[in-house]
Length: 226
Image (tube, rainbow, N blue to C red; front, side, top):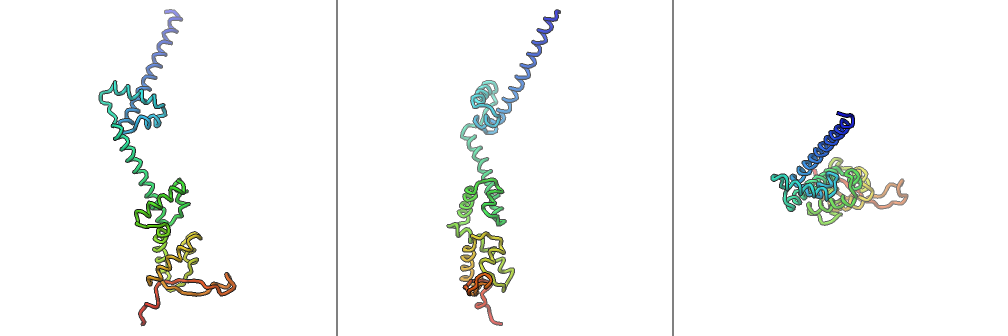
């Protein structure tokens, strides 16, 4: 055998190995495509997942239907239902994560940052929470959140007088909660859970005797005499 024929044979063998390797890779890719389709993914979803064009994925689908009698992807309706169920499960997990952070007293802006979502998404979670809890307004939600925390703090320090600012600071609330604290305390005073103690502001804060409302746990007017 001449050197020329030997080189030609080597090239032919190399080309054959390359074709076999390419054919195996293509078969592996079709197997991956078939597996994803059998799991309920649509052609478009599978194409995106595998990084190929929609037309390439469609050609694989046609070929697999011709070559494999057992290849039977779920119908489009079932595939869409499966995708919807996965989306709903993910959305529920995210909502539960919001509920945990909210229960820990994390501010909405910080919740958005920790969850990696927009503030608008957190506000949507807030509306969903209000709906589930039967709360008809944003102020109602805030009062429902603050009430147990305020009562627990007052019970921890019976007899101690607190202003709304004191409660706001002790509970680690933002400055925009002052009105909400006053609203909660108005309800607690009306219910006899807390007592309103009128007074004047500290002269170091306001030189004139500015009236100020302070509160303490219990209503001493309703307590029995000993």
